[in-house]
Structure formats: C-alpha cells, structure tokens
Length: 290
Image (cartoon, rainbow, N blue to C red):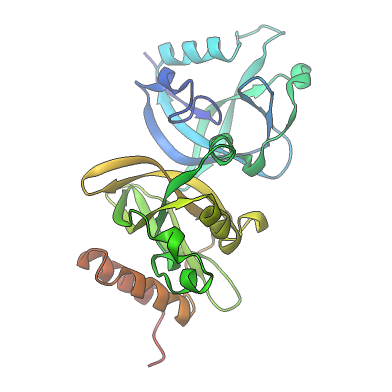
C-alpha cells in the first residue's frame, strides 16, 4: 500500500468537520502554504483556485491509498472524469521545513459558480473561528509575555484570566521579521526535539483585536494561526498564536524589544529556556548597551 502526501485547507483540517477521514493519517506539517486564492462556496466548505500571488494556508498529511480514495469521494473526484467538482493535482507545497510534494484538491474551473466570496486571512480554519468566538487561549512567545505595553494600552484586565506557562513542541524561536530598528520574534515548525515556551492567556475578542493591530495582521506582517500547547502536562489544542508571513534570516532585535522578552520570561518560563533565549540573542550578535 503506497503512502502519499495531501495538502488540506478546509473541512479536512484538524478539528474541522471532515477531519475524521484523516484520523489514521500522519501529520507532516501544521503550517503549510500554497499560492492561490481561497473562496467560500456558501455550502459549508471552501474552494481553492490556483491564481494570485497570496498564500492559502493549511496542513499536510501522509495518507495511504485507502484514505486517499475516501478523500476522492468527499471531494467529488474520479480520475479521468470531466465533470469532477474538484480536480486532484500534485503540487509543491511550502512549509517551514522545506518544499513537500503533495496532492491538492483544486476546484474544477467549470464549477466557479460555487465561488461566493473570498475567505479572509486565506485561512478557512482561522476565519471559521474568527466569525464566531467569544474567547480564546493565546500563546505569547515574544514581547507580549511582558505586560508593560499591554497595561499602557489599557488592556491588562483582558490579559489577566487563567495566565499559565505553555510549551509548544516541534517549533523553533527566531527573530525573522526585520524592521528598521531591528528584528521581531517569530516561531516556525522545526524537525527534531526543538520547543518554544511562552505565556498562555485566555482572552476575549477585544484583546484579539488589540493583538491584530499590534502584530500587524491587516498589514500582512504576522498571521493568526493555531497550535497545540502543553500546559501543566495537558495538551490544549487550537491555541491562538501569530507567525511572521515573510520570514527572513535571523538578525538582532532592538534593545527595548529584547528587554521586553527577557523581562516577560524571567522567573516564569523554565531556567533552561531562559538560557536558550539568551543564547539566541548571542547567536544573532545582540549585546545590551550597558
């Protein structure tokens, strides 16, 4: 039985309505992307068209022939048939750990009457959440671990509920978003045993809107995404965080920003991870002025 990869961007994503079809599949990448445009069909599922220079976000799973056959049925695809709802095409999909060849279900161009409107964020899962949530767990790994600016913005009450320390396995911390005064923090998927620690807040919609502005979501600096976070030995799924869209090689952050990160981490995150944060600063050539 041959295994292959499939890129999913809609109801097959983790904890979405058809994800059960992938319960025996192996997750390859949680943060995968492919250039295209994502549309809402108005029928409870999205459609991907391979046009445009923006990225559509999803996940990659390794599946066997039986699972792939079940996916073909779901997507209305039969090899060689002209009136398929979707066509299954093999594409090179980008991930944080490299390019991966994967099958992708693309809407048959003859069915474009199903395209009602473009999906915000180019992310079905994020948009489904954003239109209906009241509060969410949020994983802060950078400057938002520190509450000085949050307090200054009058938002501290929103960041004071169920505050905890969290750990995300299979991710790496880096400074990949260059700004005129220095780089800002980011996380990305990594192979091996790497991990990121941070502070988990339970926040309401007003706090999310504050973060969208602070993180430059509508300016396409960072994008909202979901990860699994370990808190006190228990895995919490679909925790909100933010990831840099256009990642660059690591460079040094500005001093005020590094100060916020270390201040937010000290005495809260593990000692080993605090040393790891200091080592990361050393590796990008950062030094404090005094």
